[in-house]
Every structure is written in structure tokens, then in C-alpha cells.
Image (cartoon, rainbow, N blue to C red; front, top):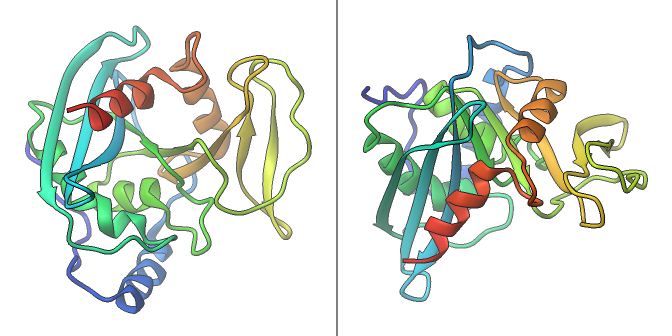
Length: 222
């Protein structure tokens, strides 16, 4: 199935222009559930080779709810955007889109290693990718980019809202007892409550959901 982008913009831009693109795109975010039955869920992660000169993106597609590996795709492109906190999608997404284009069939849901709405301009990599592709997406971050939260009980499946001032921007989710929580946020076309449910449904005995855990393996190890 070919990948048809819903929005397009240049990638070879300055950081200031990238911020302007984020501010424009975020107006199109859909924060409610707008999708049909989920039969496949994909993990998306990015690593770097040659001292950062090559961006290596991995997409793994798992059956849902079986979590059986259906397909994987890896794409390498020269890194063309500098490392700028808050603008990582401009550095990473060109290779992610290339990896998606190589799939035999596009997934029904994207779980991205990184933030979605829990971003200073509300457009982390998960939201950016979801908007461009039209595929429902969820941000699954290992670390917090911004926001505050109360302590999360050490019980699997419990969570606390991640707050930026008075706004809920995500959830701090305990996926495994005795292990630090992860940061879940809406990407595009998925509500926060539903995002939490899908992340838990994709998580087995590890901290990370199988989608992003496998994607990380392929993105990090040539």
C-alpha cells in the first residue's frame, strides 16, 4: 500500500523555519479517537551510524493483539538536520518516512519512540508523523521532555497525568512494577485514554511496549 502524505513541507530548513512549520501543523492535530479496528501496530525508532552522519530508521509491524512480528523495514539516509531539542522530528522523520514506504502494507497504528502532544509546541515526533501520514499515532517516551506529575504508584497499569501548567499533555504510565514509568501522549487521531490502553496492550514483561522495544533493537544494532 503506497504512502500518501496528508501534509507536506520542506525538510532542508533552518531551526526557526522548522518551529514555524510545527506551529502551523499543530492546528490540524486530532486528539480524539478516529480510527477503525486495529489489526496491526507498528513501532518506530531511529538510531544513528557513522558518528551521526547516517540516520537509521526502523519500523516493525506487529499483529494486534497477538504482537506477532509481521514485517520490518529499515531505511538509512544522510543526516541533514542538526540536533536541536524540540526539533528531533526534522532530523529523524525523513528516514522514518522512507522506511514506511518500503512496507508491503501500512500499519493501522504507530507507536513512536518519543513524544507526541507532550512537547513544548505540542508537536513531537509522534504527532508530526501521524499528521503527515494520516495514520493514528501515539508517543511513547522513555524520558520526560517537559511537564510535572505526581508520584505514580508502583503497580502495573497505574498512571498520573503529565501537566504543563493547567493542561494535561500526557500520562506517566507504570508499565512494569519496580521500574521507572514511561511517558505516553497522544500523537494524532488517538485520545490519551485510548493511547494508554494500547500501550498497555502492547506491553508484555518489559518496560517498553513490544512495538517500540523491537524497533529500538533494529534501529540501534546494524
